[in-house]
Image (cartoon, rainbow over all chains, first blue to last red; front, side):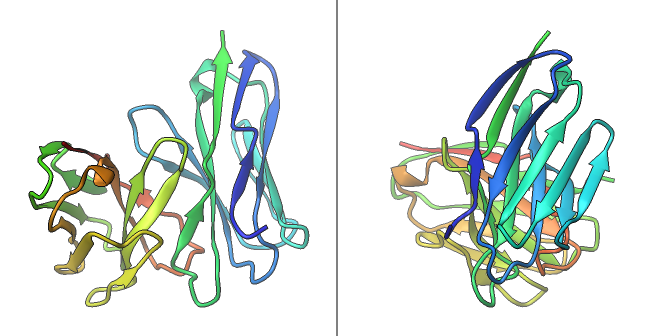
Length: 114
Length: 114
């Protein structure tokens, strides 16, 4: 993998369902992995920044895991609510000497139906 | 606490016109960034400023210039706008720009070039 990739592109779930999506990134020269939540008509807001292999972070019903050896991170939402509807972006600094340059995936758009 | 502010919120330009997008942050952050967001492509880094007095190119710098006016302010200039520059532009800042710190985003500027 030479880029940051996210799947699925979009996801529709019912209120109360738990869901998860994936972010894949190059495992070589790993520095950090960011997750952002982006609601329509607003600006992205940081959920987590993870740097260590095996890291797990949690904020309310949202949690994330990190596997730097195989180059993936999962974002989980437990008991989805309509207010969780948003686009979820992951990002990582890629390339040698480019720790400042966050490369974003194209996002997973989540719609939670009441 | 205003966080990251951007002006203007909306702008329509004719091809060949120039304009400057303004960004300011009040969080005493060292690093600032300019991104553009196009449908299906996520956020792409145009330029960044790791610290006051320095600027560097991101993924898509062609057609843009930047100025880090002081620690608070980072402007983006389009010298001769082209329809391909129609996009939503986001400014962001982080405490330190090494990729391990979350970024805070402004509300965005929606630019249309006709």
